[in-house]
Every structure is written in C-alpha cells, then in structure tokens.
Amino acid sequence: MTNSASAHDAGPVLRCLSLGAGVQSSAVLLLACEGVIPRFDVALFADTGWEPRAVYANLARLRAHAETFGIPVRTVSAGNIRDDASIRPTGSCRCHCTFSIQTAAVAWRAGNALASTKFRR
Image (tube, rainbow, N blue to C red; front, side, top):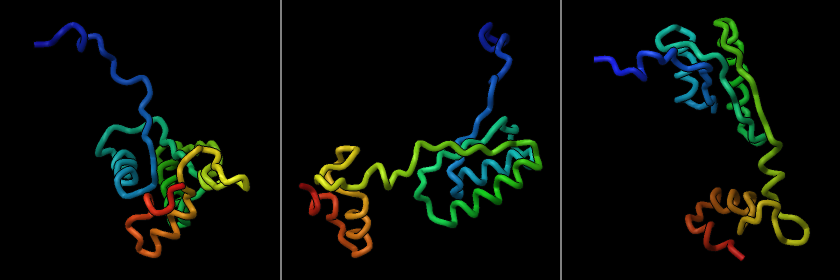
C-alpha cells in the first residue's frame, strides 16, 4: 500500500555528507564514489583549524578521489577553535568555559583523569 505523502515524494533535493575525514565518514564517501550507496551532491568538511596533520592529509586524498567521481568536497570554517578557547590575559576565555583547552590537553597527556575538575576556577 502506498500512502499519498510518499507517492509525491521526489526524494531529497540536495544530498550532503558531513565529512569529518575520520574512519566512518571517509568510508561513507568512498562507498558513494563506488556507487554502493547513492551519490552525494557535496561533502562538507567543517574545519576547526586545529586538526591533526593526518586528518588534513586524509582530507586531501578524499577530496582528489571524490572529485574524480563528481562529488565536490568543500571546507567551511569559522576560525581556529584553539584561538577561540584560549585564555585571555585577563583570565577569562572567549567562550566563557571553565578551563582552557591547553590546560585540559596538558592534563590529559599527563594521564590526569580529573582534569575537568582539578583545573576549574
């Protein structure tokens, strides 16, 4: 039985992939390139400005591969997340968080599981 809503549905107007350039979204993009799943009209990479080099290297490979299959990969960005979360000289951060990303990263590298509570003001 076909309902009237689905009978008139022509499908999606625009098929976008949110591309993080990690394992899962990379696999989805490659499946679309190979025709295993429907093709995307565009893949969007939201750049934090502070990704590991390996992510940018993978993104470059994905972009080149996808574009040969007619899927453009576009990058969007609102700046560098590290700059936005850094502690200002006054002691407050731009995003009003309770501790800086740098402090949390240093604590994490040191193996401190309590970083989120230890470094709160």
